[in-house]
Length: 174
Image (cartoon, rainbow, N blue to C red):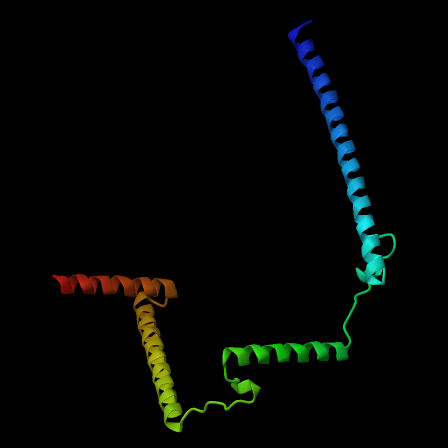
C-alpha cells in the first residue's frame, strides 16, 4: 500500500468516526432534552393545579406550548389601585426618613427674587455679546485673509492666518 492510499483510507476512517461520534452526541442530547421536558411538564402540572388555572393560559401559551399572541393587560381600576399603593409606600418611606414633601407634591415652590433674575439675565446677555463679538472678529479676519489670498477657499485663508500668526510670534520673540 502506497503512502497516498494509506492517507486516503485513514481519511475515510476519520470521516466515519466523526459522523459516528456526532450521531452519538446528538442521541445523548436528545435524551437529556426529553428528560428535561418531562420534568418541566410535571412542574407545570403541579403549578397549574395549585394556581387554579393552567400555566399554559397564564403564560400566554396554548396546551401545545405555542404562543397564543394574546397579551394580558391590567384594567384601569387595577392600575389605579397599584399606583395608589405605590404612592402610599413612598409616603411612608419619606415619613420614616424625615423628608419634607417636594414642590410637585403640594409643598411650597421656591421663587427667584427679581434682583437675582435680573443678574442672571444680564450675565447671559453679556456672555452672548462676547460670543457674537468673537465670532464677528473671526469672520472679519477670515474674510480679510481671503481677500489677501485672492478669494480662494476658506481653508487656504485659515492657513494664511495661521502662518501669519506664526511669523508674528517669531518676530516678537526675536
